[in-house]
Length: 130
Image (tube, rainbow, N blue to C red; front, side):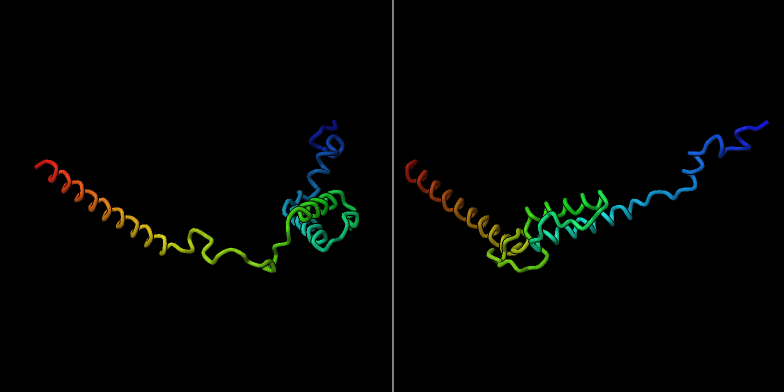
């Protein structure tokens, strides 16, 4: 009597093939996608037309096209060729000491002003009340 346990290849040929094949490599897929995407972006920044896609695989063609389209809408910021027009303390953390000194001076000035106003009001009330 021939059972499935004795002849599993005949009964489950698809299962036998799946077990022998290698598992998919997601890291390799991502690495290939990234390489094609970067090549497409570099081609766009080098002013090459989008028809010069060198890949034949559909996945890599799509990655190259995606990189090319993204790079056409975004400037090349890989080096600092652009002139800096902003002032030297353009970030909030750049001048932390100065802002704390300004805050302390503002609080001190407010306190002195309130004290002077209260003294003036007190003198005026004394003068009008007597």
